[in-house]
Image 1 (tube, helix red, strand yellow):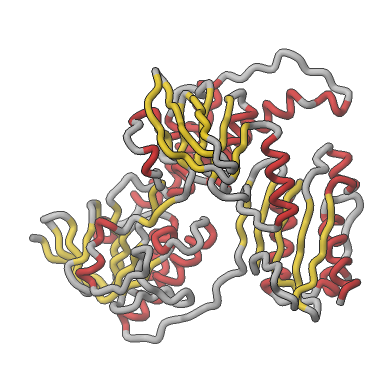
Image 2 (cartoon, one colour):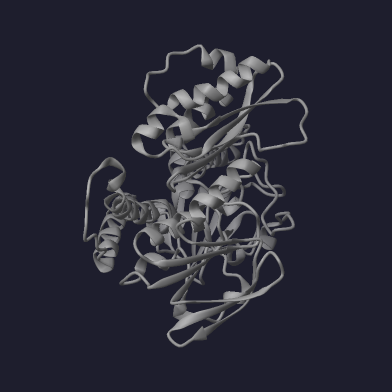
Length: 461
C-alpha cells in the first residue's frame, strides 16, 4: 500500500472542501484534496444553478401568458420541454466545468481520487491502495437526497434533485413530496411550464416560512397554480402503467389517490457520512449520526478533525458552505502546526426561496411566545412599486427587541432576495430599526415597503 503524509487531508471536493483546501494551503499547510466523484459542487451540478435555470424558464412562460394585465396581448405561447432542458443542462454544465477545471489545475500531489475512510484518528485509507497520515482532517463530503421509504422501489419513475435535471422532456404530470424551499421552487417552475403538479407535505408551512399569516398567504398563492396539500401523509406508492400512484391521507384523515407520470422526492438531503467509518476516528456522534462539533471553530469532539458544508447538516446553503470551508481549512492548518484555532461567530442566518413571489427567513426565528419582541408588519398588496409591476402579493414581518435592535424576520414578496440582504446586514451589525429607518430610500422602490415595516417598530419602541 502506498503511504503518504500530509498536514491536512480534506475529504470532498465540493464548495466546502475546495475552500478548506485553499485555506489550508494559504496557512502554510501541506494539504491534499480527496474526491470520489463526480465533483463540481452540489450547487452547480444539482442544486441552486440548475433549479434557477428551470425557474427562469417557468418565469418566461408565465410572463408571456400574463401580459394582459398591462394591455399587451400575446397568444400561442408554447413550451418546448426538450429545449428547456437542453438549455438548462448546457448552462449547468458550463458552471460545473468552471469548478472541475479549477480542480484539474491542482498539482498531482494535492489531489487524489477515490473513496476515503478513516483507519484511525490520524490515518485515512483510499480503497486498498493508499494510506494517508494526517495531522488534521476536514470532512466536507456533502449530502445526498433523502428518499422516503414510501417511495423506494419506484425505479426510474422516482426523481430526486440529483436526477431531475437529466430527464429528456418535461413530464405530463409530477407529484412532489415536500413543500419546502426546493420542493416549492421546482413545483411552481414546472407548473408554469405546463406540467400538472401535485405537492404533498406533512407539515403546515410552505417555502420555509413559519410566521402564520405569511405561511397562509404563501399556501394560497402557490396553491392557486398547483394542487397543494399540507398536513398530508403519503402511505404507499406503486408503479401504475408508465406512471406512479400515490396513496395518501389528507389533513382530515381521508384517503386520497394521486396518479402522476413521475414523483419527485424533495424532503431534504442527508450528510454523506456512512462510507467514512467515523467510529474508527473516535468521533462522538449526535442522534442524527453527525459528529458533534463546535459551531464556531468547526472542530469535532474527540479528534483533530473538522467538518464543514452540507456534511455537518447545519446550514446547507452555498455561502455558509464556502465560509465554513475557509474556517475549517484554516483551523486544520492551525491544529497541524500546534497553533490555537479561530472561533468566529456564525453569520446571521439567511435562507431564500426563489419562487414568485420570493421568500426569505433572516436571523432569529419566529417566536410568538417571546414577550420581549416588537413586530413590524407591511402588506405588499398596496405597495406602490409592487402594484406598478403587478407583483403586489405577500408581506414582511420584522422583529426587534424592546430597544429596537433588529433580530430577524420573514418576507414573502417581490425583490425579497434584495430586501433580505439589507435586513441581514442590519441584524449582523446590531442596528436599530430607528437607525436604519433614518436612511434615504428612493421612490418608487420596493425598499419603501421594508422601511414601512421598520416604521412600525420605531413607533412601538
